[in-house]
Length: 141
Figure 1 (tube, rainbow, N blue to C red):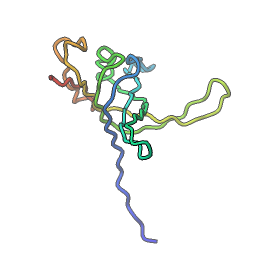
Figure 2 (cartoon, rainbow, N blue to C red):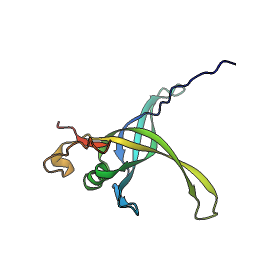
Figure 3 (cartoon, helix red, strand yellow):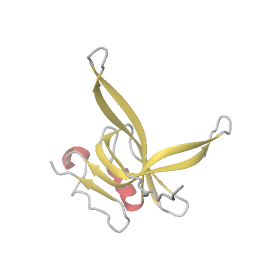
């Protein structure tokens, strides 16, 4: 069989609303990390009943470094955001039975806030963080 070279591609684009306030933490080395969950909706027409239905997916998101600090200050439950990032998996151990499981989340490299600055509590707007490889933006409507 001929050797096939597959392109390495891991890109995720999501738009949705936070299901809870963003949670900012710091690693033992002092690196900021922010986690939140995003509800992403899909509306479709049921082929049998002809009715419109909603399907919601819940996706865990992590943001790192300076962008994480800005997300932790700005993002609250219900905040609409657009996320660009990559899928990342890691192992976790269950507290109940000690079983090891794999968890999948989106590691965001860009977070774009989709609401006006005045309604999100942002003062002066957020500046992109190019040096850290991740940024957070506010869309001025």
